[in-house]
Image (cartoon, rainbow over all chains, first blue to last red; front, side, top):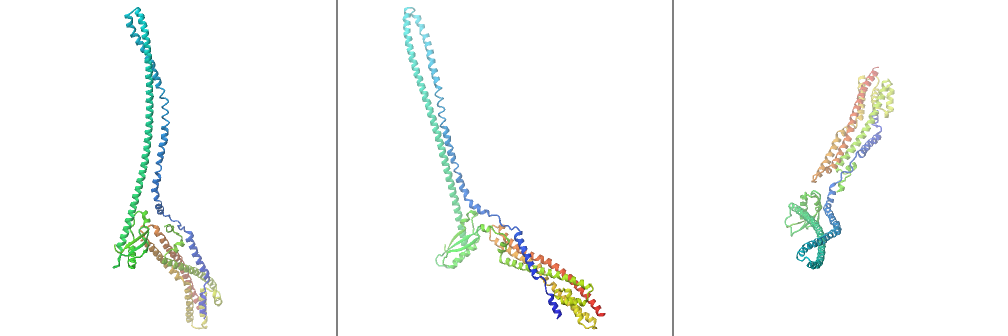
Length: 316
Length: 226
């Protein structure tokens, strides 16, 4: 009996609860170390792809925005016109002055030379014919002749003056013509500038038209690409369909397929049943079987494929 | 898109988002680790207490104390007694049960049998749960590894459906899977260390008990011969 008592007593264990508490404490410490001690990465690098594709349309618009800068050239010619206009008045004042002295010299010199020649030539024959009375008569006649000559000279002077005036008028006319020519040139320049401007505007319009055409072409290409890949997707799905035999009529099943980038299928929903469960399920299976659906390599076009509507006819 | 890209990578999120088998493995490992630490502390206290009691009793015994007084002390205060005291009490009690003048060889044989029985029981008690620590130390890394392999399998399987594979697709799965290995190692390392330590301690105690039994039987034999 004493042995059995001793055996029972031997199983008394000290501080059982304390051991459990200590074990819990050790684990709490370890968990705290794991949570707070290690620097778990809270902010992985942000996805850059999304930002790039949402901003893609803007670079196409930017060239259109940058085209306005060409208009400044339109403004530049205008200041160029203004300096041209003030210039013509400047040459006008100096030009009238120089012609005047030229006209005076022409008017003064000829009358002095002509009387000398006339006196020397005519008096010599008169002295040889009649020396005395005749000389007086001749002198009187000469005086008369001289007076006549003087008158003629005066007439000639007047004529010359008139001629000079006429010349001056002609010069003035020439000047006016020159002015007119200059004005015409200015007008021509202005016209040329206007033509240049018009040409620039036309060129801009043409460039814009070209850009629009290019954009339209790009859009056409995009739509072509989209339609091409949609046709490819439909063809791939159709190739996977195991058609249930002998269905009446031409049932049509419509599916709404949600795609992931890379051609993976996220979700397939039957949007319009064909009325034949076998056909619906066959098409659904075919959609899942053709799992990596062909998608255009340009990720920007993926938005067109995110939600696809697929309609399958039983008979083509 | 953004919600999937910016994942919370904290420990709690990784554990809660792990697949069910991995979570099960983690739960098992947490329970095993808790149990093993509980046993580690229990055995620590028991073995400390046993070594202290043995030291005390040996000190008193070899100082030449009266055997009857020692026996009465051991049986009266048995709840605070140590293993060596109980071995002494079993042997001395069996020795005293025989009437004076009986065959010495038979008396000593029965005394030695009684002491050996108590010794076996005490050693069984001291070594209890040490096998559990040994099992935890050897098996829990494998359990953790199983969870990790399962988690990595899942993360790579989900990678197969993605055409453009990035490390971001696999990283969370591998991280959550590796937590299982960490937990397994956390359970195993202290268990192995404690097992080795306690095994050597109990071996030392066992040799002390055995030598004490031999010496006590010598003392009792001399006492019977007188």
